[in-house]
Image (cartoon, rainbow, N blue to C red; front, side):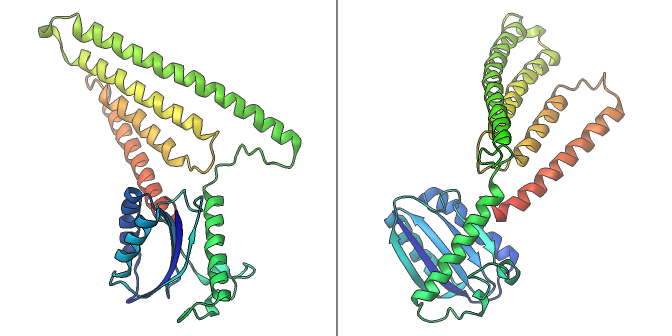
Length: 291
């Protein structure tokens, strides 16, 4: 594998929509090519790191070089690597502002450095410090470390170890629950659909089957939520909201509108709108800042 870093200058002011378009296409293409990396935009130029198999990176660079949105394309570093530095992102991103670097030793003079023309050893070192800084900052933001085992206090570490063990037991029990729910689906299908004459089936039997399927899906989502607490580099908020949406969806599917009041339906609609809006905001927030 190789890691390649290049600099370029935008040919026109780059808007947020332009950046979103660049990122969406880059993440889709890079995922299919097995390429990871990070893009930094300083307002005056682009710094991008690409890593992956040599042929894949080289072919991608040829396409990027011809993009009319930038000019002065310069490869400043190309090196062989055994492991990826940016394996978590098909394309990480950060819009770099002066305030981001004001109090960072070694980088507080970055915006005063002229990166035009040939890149000296000092400038390359500065760019590497910049990319490493934001790589580490991004990882810190994405780390789910509420149950960290790296605490200085031995008693806190002991408590966290015990809770992690409890979570693992919960994950095992949840796995058994999922299998139990799958067995329940089989039983429901047998009793509601197979052993009765087809002409006697009505919507209540079909809704019962749908409800059983939804229970399995919700159980799987809860299992994933549980396992998130014993993993690192994850942001579980979206998964929790998605699980809540699925649980409400199940209730809607199995509603018998002859038995529920109008206020019940209205309340459920407001809940769906609230959860849907929350998920949309989370998706919009994470779309640029994480992968």
